[in-house]
Length: 256
Ligand code: CIR
Image (cartoon, rainbow, N blue to C red; front, side, top):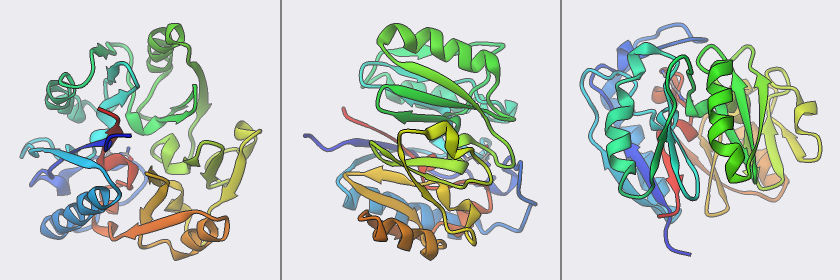
């Protein structure tokens, strides 16, 4: 299999003015966040990705979080309409880049949808209804994907920003869940690994080439994954986490 593409985007110098939903604003060291982002992209390369990095945009505070701007499938990419108005212009550069690899489909008003609310498990997409992604976003995505053979399920998101803040797929049949933020009953039929209760923010992971990438700040959940037989790689992303970003949100990973 050829190396997967990891599409990333540099940080905005205005990252400290990022959108925040569940976290209080704290002083943010943009240079340190940029160093952590560089370490993250090196980790993606080490796991076998071919990294394509778009330049950050000084006025788009959250542009580093590319996951929210598109859902990339095997045959097409869907450009989203992010729930935060400040983030909508981010899609332009991502669409321009993705056009090289996929025909594009696009969501339109009144839909809002962030990629962080879209969890794919095989042919099923779980879509979080959150402060960012609305019912129209779910319905439009379903209209685009159902004819392509996918099943879409809407799930309510409470207490956190996105569905994938609360749950992520660590393999084709296993999910890592914070059961306080997401109902494990919605994932009946899958193996379920609950996060370490002391690390509620640790459910967001990213699997690349069979390795589960997760933040260094969550050794308890990392141990749980290793005990379950998963290979893991931890990266320092605590500065990016102040902007409510996790490891999945800083890339779009797909086969060319
Ligand atoms: C936001 O609130 O939109 C950004 N500050 C963080 C986005 C993180 N995205 C993600 O986890 N998919």
